[in-house]
Length: 277
Image 1 (tube, rainbow, N blue to C red):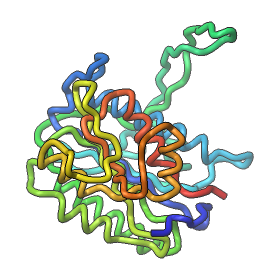
Image 2 (image 1 turned 180 degrees about the vertical axis):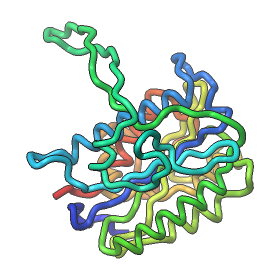
Image 3 (image 1 turned 30 degrees about the vertical axis):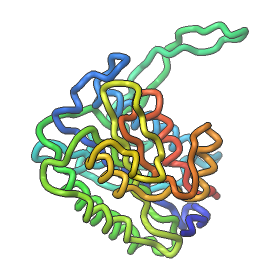
């Protein structure tokens, strides 16, 4: 395990977000949000924040190649809309230049002395929520494997790709575990590809976050997702610990029955790759 390669424009890394868009993602979570809508919001926010991280005086630097794969019903493919529709992995500068639209959102802003004021802010949108049909997770993992293998072939000296997979249910097209193992076996000379799994649930409570063993997991499905997940690299262990989570070198980057309060943290920790230069 390495994961120490400096990330720069000559040696970028890749973030691939894989989003379950099956019919069950239309269920309402505690707090009132629909699962598909909340996940899309968190993903759009993550893309915007990643763009900010890459923005320097000379513009947006291409430290990251980013793709978003959606799967549901009979469909597995790019979840981008608008000018990026149908494209899989793109330099982050292209993503910055091609939002699907710019929404306005009301948020609470601290105006001083702990007084909150409602303000309108711009909210770029690249991914719209979707939910339809079954859960072709095995096919989705196969598509991810092809993308990751090609990217590693083209970037052998880079920090390896990170795959962030979000799902709420069982695969309906066969066992995805073998395909997931193949993804984790693809590597650059800085380490194997990382596969992180986030299971979202409708009800808060009973979350299992970053377990280090499958022994206490409640069912075969959760144990399968645990086995599909990579161990947390050392630098991300430090990030997670800094945010107050109980993790160690044996912890897997996996969460089961995650609620709304945790989902944003999962994305935030998962996209803290090595140092940017």
